[in-house]
Image 1 (tube, rainbow, N blue to C red):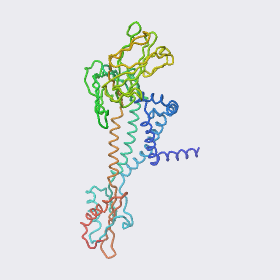
Image 2: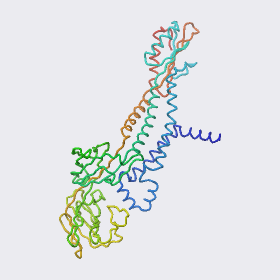
Image 3: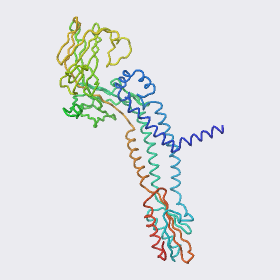
Image 4: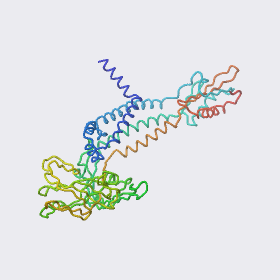
Length: 501
């Protein structure tokens, strides 16, 4: 039992050492790197699905290692928790030591002041008792903590340096707690909204939704918004032709079901904030509109389908599923905002704006697999039980009569869609406060010097009194000689100079 207790004490001492705390802080930063390399389910679920499709073997291994959920992974949480324990075990004992230090007097003068880094001496016949008293009063008025002995005056200043150090480390603890609260009681979600359509803050409306461990979907604020218009502008010509120069989403927002609608413009650096939720504009694309009719002329599908961009020029792919047609019908293809004239590399767009839009579609007939009960992606078409019946390219307003009179596909136009990321983080305000305090504490610990100065008066062998002033700094302090000189002058005023070195 004794050896186990000793081993646990050793383990605790190692964990709460500053060396391990710095190592864990570095490890936490290193563990965050995969979150910026690989797409994350909380912010880009479509990209995660695409990555898994493109890399089925390595993607499966990475998924098991939580590379697509880095900040919700158990290994990231373990590092996070160990860092918190390490910082707490390191900083809290120092707080009690600092409190004791504040209540204690400056240390007594050392025996040999001449060994200190800064040293001055002179002789005088003035009473030692009078000089000690007046020097102590003068140093105290200058903001130094003073202690008087039988033959010395001790002064110290710079206690705020350690306070700044403690403030920095406690702010790091507070920052960890704030981030933990935000991740536990907050949520993140993504949604794609087409022009003319809306979104209500309900979990069923999200394309992806990642709640914190302590968050309840019943706590979702009942706000809503609709996308009135999405605008994008691109550079024409030059080296950066096609680069985005401006895009924003005009939305109508209701903070509550019975509230009055309010028009708001959401831009990249100007998110929408409503009911404690921040709505960011994170992407956009095109939704071509189709009308599908069966062999009898009945409309079996009429809507705008979300197509996902595949490159910077918004070559986008997507699918349309018409389960009500007999037999079931599916469309699979590409939407090109500005179609190329060179098809040697296949259909592609040469500019992101819809200057010459076209769709290249293939039609499939058979069983869509929607009745199997297995969830399907709205961006993929399962053709294992289907037969391709034709391919066609369409411009807006054109129709495609399917072979053998099996129906008609009409490309009626297109809408734009915008992708929004919604986040509720109750700890972000506290996180900002602790970050500011951490910077303030670090500044104090770096700029405020900690130094000690002593005056000793002893009897001289030549008669009279020998005055010695010495100074010491915990760290390199260029201003120490000047401080010692100022304090020595205060002592020297009450001791007329006889001999001064």
